[in-house]
Structures are given as C-alpha cells and as structure tokens.
Image 1 (cartoon, rainbow, N blue to C red):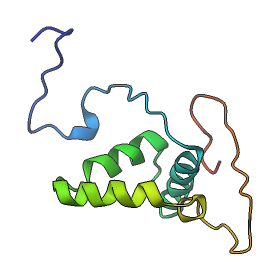
Image 2 (image 1 turned 45 degrees about the horizontal axis):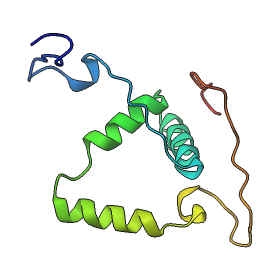
Image 3 (image 1 turned 180 degrees about the vertical axis):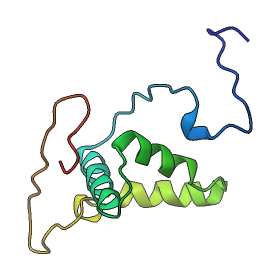
Length: 109
C-alpha cells in the first residue's frame, strides 16, 4: 500500500501510539465546550490528558451496534445547550461559551 492509499498498522499495536491523522471535525460550540469540561474533569482525576486524546478515547469506546448509534444520533438532535454544557444554572436563559485561539490549550482552560 502506498502512502497515498493509506497506512499499514500492526494489528497488535497500542492504538494510542500509532500514526495520527487530523480529523478536521467541525461541531457546535456547546460540544466543544463540553469537551474542554470533560478534559478538565479527567485531569482532576489524574489523567493528564488533552482534547485530542479524550476525543479519541470516546470514539474508540463507542458502541458499534447500529440501533444504539441511531438512538445516540436521535438523542443528540434533540439536546438543548443546557443538556450539553456542564454546570449551567437552572434559571439561566443565556450561556456564555469562551472562544480560544487555535492550538493547544493550557490545562485548566
């Protein structure tokens, strides 16, 4: 297989240590904010992780059952901002979500 066709990986290699590929994912601000919040929670527990690693872990551990994926998508399409962003006060009508510059974020952002 040529580099233009793809890559060959050892099937028994630890996936987290294999060659990387940019995902170029574009998603709504509430999802991006939640990823930051989840990274902070994982780091509070001692994970010493970053957004890329947590996102990869979530994708790698997700269900492969079509009906469960369908249910997940249907639920996602109905979720409110307050269902996704953590710690929104019940009375809040507006949610402020910070913008960050491209690149690595400082731990605790």
